[in-house]
Image (cartoon, rainbow, N blue to C red; front, side, top):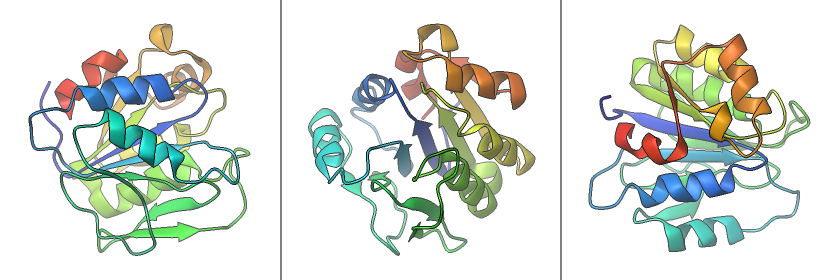
Length: 184
């Protein structure tokens, strides 16, 4: 298993917070590529997720803002109720268009735009969740030559999302949450 180059983008929903905390804790004492985290959250959630993850992460965490440049050694959190798009110039755009898979932010949209912007240098990781969001995005990542990692459904708190993606999109690696930091 080799370390990621370029951008790492992580998607998750129900049950993924513990996996993300475990994953971030494993990043200590090293340089990491930029990481974007797209989690389904309730409308109106403020920046408390970024604050919580800042406490748990050895890497700086911030809620993403419009036109943020994507930089190494930084973790960007998609704000609640906005789609996060990765632009060709490696900046972030936020969008308030309709929900996809009942979700805004949509993991699919973030994965698809990241695949278009980063191609082979993208690693997309899908964690626990209760709907099919992320599967179409992972197909786009694979089509652009990026790497796909899916949390082992047997160890996911809610197995539906990773299981669906594994069956419909496939994966380069299927890992437990505590194993994922080794490939970032």
